[in-house]
Amino acid sequence: MKKRMSRMHRRQALRWFAALGAIAIGMGGAGACKKPAAAQRAGTAVDPWLVGMSQCNLGEPWRVQMNEDIEQAAAKHPNLRVVFKDAQNDSLVQRAQVEELVAQKVDVLLISPKEAAPLTKPVAKAYRRGIPVVVLDRAVQGDAYTTFIGADNRKIGHAAGEWVRRTLGAKGRIVELKGLMTSTPGRDRHAGFRAGLALAQHPDLKVVFEADMQWLEPNARKEMESALATQKEIDLVYAHNDPGAHGAYLAAKQAGREKQMKFVGIDALPHEGVRYVQQGLLDATFAYPTGGEQAIDAALKILAGKPVPKKIVLGTRLFTRDNVARGGEEVQ
Ligand code: FRU
Image (cartoon, rainbow, N blue to C red):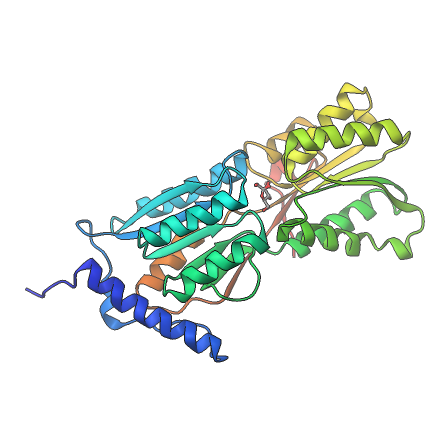
């Protein structure tokens, strides 16, 4: 019988080769870490690989879904064990949790960082120590990680801007409720949206109110109350996520003005945004896949010594009142 490599030895070998990969990147190398053939004899039920998942918060349904997607995908592989950490929407807590996972000697680190800047260093540190890192949905700065998995937020924002311009007939007063602007999706969904609106070419289209609601429904509701108090006419609210759009809808409903305007969000979870569209609360939402399944896929490839691309871009779908019954439509 073939002697199995102990988990410790497998790890050491994996780290050694990952570290070599990191050095190669530092020297301007290709980026993909070469893993040892021995590491291909991945963990077994007796001695599984340890995957650490650092989630920035579990306060929103979308993040709960991401963890569920990871758990479900991992459950199909008895050679994987996933430990989850919830940073409760605090970047400092998340930094400390990443360090804990590194100290726990995880074989692969998955992370969906709250903010780019504060999480860049701990991620880079883990990576340079030879731990493969899969970054999900929100980016970090630089390229000291193994792979990034997520949808193209600039593209989604752009599609939202075009949809809004077309739907309003290039004329109207818009409120934009932005996601956390220290996180990359917030910045990209904003920049893409403005490019899609093309305000310079459409002088009758105006953004009359904008605020950072930090992805949170209660904040969105409060900001929308300010918008309603200062703006007599609002034709449409674009929120960077569905909780934000829902918060805005509730504020408008309380003011008895919800029928005067349209509401657009992003995420399109079946039991959240898509349902809001079905119920007629939202006019449109764009799917933002969690990438949980793809993260486990990538982790398995890395552990088997196979190359993974530096960036894995996920698609999106548009759900409107017209197409929701047909399952929405793909955004090209
Ligand atoms: C959840 C969330 C989602 C959004 C994503 C962006 O925390 O706000 O609603 O699409 O994060 O990173």
